[in-house]
Length: 428
Image (cartoon, rainbow, N blue to C red):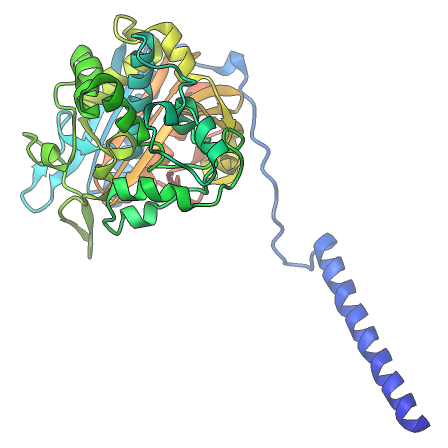
């Protein structure tokens, strides 16, 4: 018996010794990596030197064209439309590729694309216009306009405001029920089922991106105006700004004189396919279509160039940050390398781009990508629309802003420039 006890004790001591060595090795590896082990470094974004900022963005258009040429030569996109705006003027416009590879119809400045989540800024802008007309307030509660709407508890249902849904502060988990929208579940049914979802945080206290809850603004618009949401956008935004080819919905897209088909890769070529209907069912979140020419006018208006349509006070409200979005700081290489702060306003992301304010949004649905961003203090902005799911073009915006702001050159698009190369642009 004694011999067995000693044998058991020795075995237990050996186990403790091995465990101790194992834990020591883990602790050591955390503080002293072995030779040749890759060390992860934290990138500290640089800060803009005001003296290095260019007076004019025009001299950098040759660089932009060269990068676009490299994307085209590498076969990275099926079609792309790009415009740069400074002040109230379009200083550069570039298109390439095909609206339809099957028919070889080329992308032009008036070719209509799906905007995906760039649609959200139209929803928030319309809301602001309705508020200016006295039909709503930012603090109007959803339940006061839509009495049947409910979240998981009565307190949350009664507190939720228009500003909350348009800044993604609903308190629901990220992208609630988006997967069911993609499975063709009806939007009204999913709105009802929001009452079944446990709250991730109290209303107004955290950020979590939404499409279904965001689109309640469409129902609210109808309730207070007696008119369909898309009619109100057309009447109050598209027509006054001269956005002549901007529309809502798949039928309107396909009835456009020139429209970009979505594409997927087919070997070394691209193949067009039919647009997916899913997110069109939520017009405020992702239902808009527009051409590059339309979006140039929209960008000028958002930078303050059309005060007859969008007042300076309204724009200040739309672009004022409301909630922190810390995940944005690490979501893509250019964000990790440039952003000092990331927040969400009303339909817009607001970043500190190396210390320079950047108002931005991206959009992505099947077969389409879009980006818009501008530096409000410099009155410089860029819009890009493309009809495939490549990430490469999204790196062009930070590359151009880096040049203009005098920041170190980085190849955020992976186009093989002489600048330091990143692992690609990425998109929302």
